[in-house]
View 1 (cartoon, helix red, strand yellow):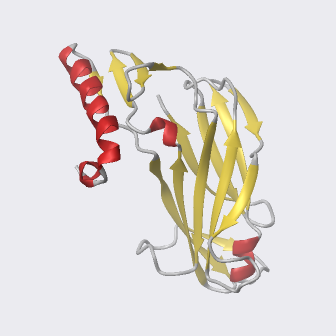
View 2: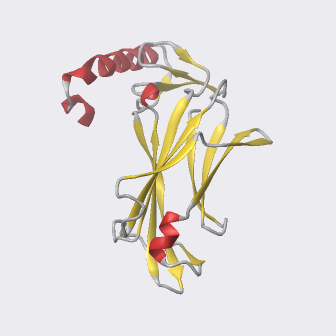
Length: 199
């Protein structure tokens, strides 16, 4: 596995995760692959009209506390176990979504939809908005980000790609919740969403 080829500092976490996974399998439980600190959340390709620019949106979940954690199924029930074997019942307090919005041909998929906008494509990238919702059964609540940053190339430098880091600080959020980050256009239109769920 790729993470076994990284620096030695990852080996203790990897070893613990393998021990937990082996124990789960030995007890007849179904253990899913271990979580990583950075987890891909998907991609969406859109066409901006009338400019005709192709917009790629790629999502990544950044949560170092989940490195090596396992989802273990027990019949109709499931639970999360950390790399050191402790039960996880709540989302980590701090985590981030990293969203790359690019006008480059980084994804070969055809556009899934058309977005009408009066914004120039590079300005569109700078004015995107984000909203996170937590779903628990039929109940939905919105969670405000702690901060939204554009990382990499400074905003005042013209560029065809922007990377956003949307940071969250949550407390006592149960892992039974399903988190959805909505990516919105400058006008507030829903462009796509990325999901963060543990069960």
